Structures are given as structure tokens and as C-alpha cells.
Length: 387
Image (cartoon, rainbow, N blue to C red; front, side, top):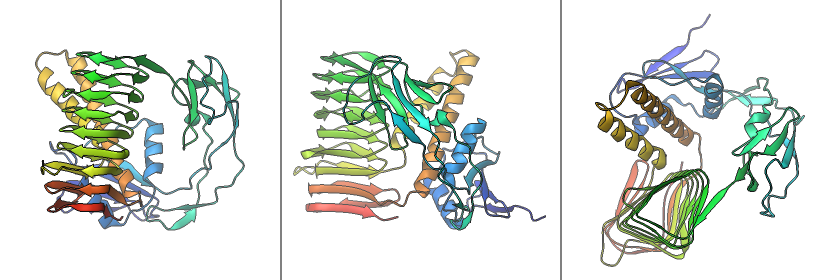
């Protein structure tokens, strides 16, 4: 029987093992105290020619509850067919934006009979698909539950929605006038009708601010999307997207797009997006240092840094069980970050920084490992690195 092929990267920090049928690949991160280098991993996988199956491998690892550890191989790519999406009988109109009450029936799942006959191996070549099993639980999101009849029920009152992956969830929200000099956490969407000033927030949902975010250097952390008018000397992090009017001397980071109004501007500070930056003006006529970057998973990177700092600070003054739990959480975040790197390899969309009006001198643009310093005013400038 043919054996798996083993490939070591040139830095000797990673080993890749490929099955004889080219349907499976396992990656071992060799022991090191250094954080995973995304460019090193991308270069290694690109060199091997693996182009497909990253999402399939993640699904199998998640289903098995596997935790990635250094010096142990884990499945990184798996060839197979993508199962077709299910059909729904919906009991709400997604376009109506109307709240439903707790225990409302939202949908009934109808498994599709659509065949999935052709798949691909990890190098992108066609192969016969493997069987798949329909899993209704995959389409039941936040604040919902599914019963034995494959019906999705609202656990809480709120706004029902269905996303691109056909996951149904309920959005709940809190509304406040202002938040000043507070440290608060919210387990749902948050609407602030005024300003957020000198505060630190954790929001498990979307954040909408109809005023300004000012002097929040300790951080605004949001697991969904953020919309605000103006930010000044603040650190703002979103696992979704950020939409703004202006930002000065702030750090902005979003997993998805950072975009703005027709008049939007970013002056000073650092801006990081995992997908695209699309605003009117970047920098200023005073040539204040300003940077904009398309990076891999900037929100997760920030979460890892925060937890690393917290663990270091509490190392000698915390119960061992609590430290162990925090270290396990750190491992989970690092695993998610590694998966984000892998997802980038499977994404053929170009990364862009689109400056619709102008970009000023002393501005730095970067997309992954490509960078540029702007030395003169550029109008209607698109900085793009195609995949």
C-alpha cells in the first residue's frame, strides 16, 4: 500500500502529510514559542499546490471536537462534494424587518433531493463525491432552537433573519442614550442614540452609534457589525464590518469590510480590514501619518493579544484551573486564526483599498505582504493585489 507523502517547509517549522489519493492533507505545526506566521503558512501551502478542501476539513474537525495542538498532525484539507443547501418553508418575511415573539415558529427545513455527484481532491481536480448527511442543526442560529420535526423556533423575542449560509437566527437589542466613563458588556445588539465617551465595551452582536465614539482607548469590541458617525482617539474592533463618517487618530479593525459615507475620511492612526477598505479620503493635507491595511483576521489577532496579555499579568496570582481555562481559550482563538489563514488560501476574490476621492502623502497602504508608501496626492485611487 502506498504511504502518505511528507513535506517539510524550508523553515522546518511545519510538516505536511498528503494521502496517496490526494483527498486528505494533514499539517503539523512543530514546537515553537512564536505565534503562527501567516505568510510562512501561506507560502508553504501555495508551494505544495493545495487549493481545495479547507472548509471540508474544518467541518470534520469541528464535528469531531478536535483541538489543534503543536507537534500533532491535524486535518487541513479534505476533498469532497459540497452538500446542497436545504430548502425552507419560511413563516416570516426576511425583507419585512418585523419582530416576532418568543416561541414563534420561524421555519421548517426540507432536505433537498438535489444530487451531489462530483467533488474535487485537495489540488482542485474533479473526483467522485462522498456521501453527505443532512444536519438540520447547522441552520439553527442564535436565540433559536430546532425540534424533532426540523422546525426552527424563536427562543427569544426579536428580529428574525436568514444569512447567506441559510442559518436562521433572532436578533435582540438594547437601546441607550449615552455611555460615559463605563465598562460594560452586552449579550445582544446595542443602539446608542448619543455618544460613547471614555468607556470600554464588549458587545455580543451589532453596535449602532448615532453620535461619536471619543477617547475609548481601552477598546470597543463587537462580535457583529459597527456603525458610527465620528471616532476620535479610540480603539474599535469588529468581527463583522465597520461603517463610518470619519475617524481621527484611532485604531480600527474589522474582519470584513471597512467602508464609509460619500464624505468619509480617516486621518491618523491605523486601519485594518480582513477584506476591503472603501472610503472617500485617507490621510490629510497636513500629511499626518496614516496607515490602511488588508490583513488576515485583525479582530482575532487582537483577541489573541488581549488574552496573552491577561494570562501574563495573572500568571502568579490566579488559580491553576482558571489559568488552564484561559489557556484553552487562547488555544481555541489561535486555532480560529489558523483557520482564517487557510480560508484566505481558498478565497480567489481580490483584496482592495478603494479611496474614492483622494489619498494624501505620508500614508501607508498594505495588502497582506504587499505594501506602498504614498508620496504624492492620488485621486480616485484603487490599490489592489489580485489573487
